[in-house]
Image 1 (cartoon, rainbow, N blue to C red):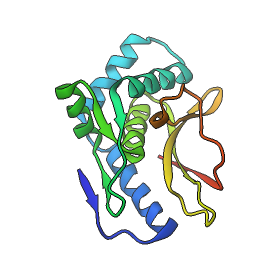
Image 2 (cartoon, one colour):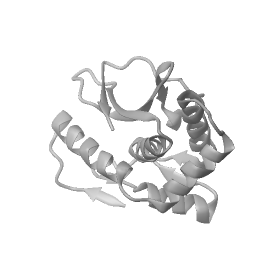
Image 3 (tube, rainbow, N blue to C red):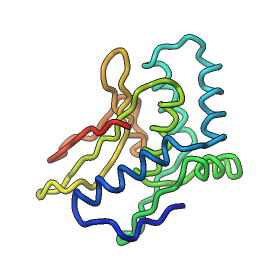
Image 4 (cartoon, rainbow, N blue to C red):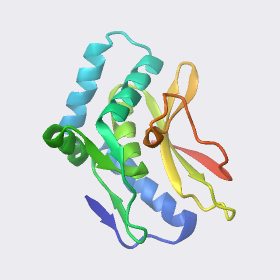
Length: 165
């Protein structure tokens, strides 16, 4: 687990966190490679939309949401989250952790991905992140922490921005 202690305030700090998330999502992960192979073999010749939907279903089936400590930003590397799934049958993480795993998995499946940072605040400072798959049918949200189906996204954001993985 990576604990970010020297992060700037507000959206500049969010961008710093997203940069770290991108590195972790694209970094080496034998378990993530294996999961991508498993999903690819289960869906031979599938479109990017079908592969992204399968990845979303896997997230829903294997992860449980828990918030970070309010004063500490922590990122769980995909390899560690997948080790939790291997050892306990499910992994636990917040929206950053879900997004890290989803982005890394999509890229390994050959599906372009974006981190979407969003705000529910009046000052428009980002307080949520999820992944969006770039499929042949267009962008599809994968906000799995709410347990909703593939393509669902929360409403009422005051600001939202997509950042390429």
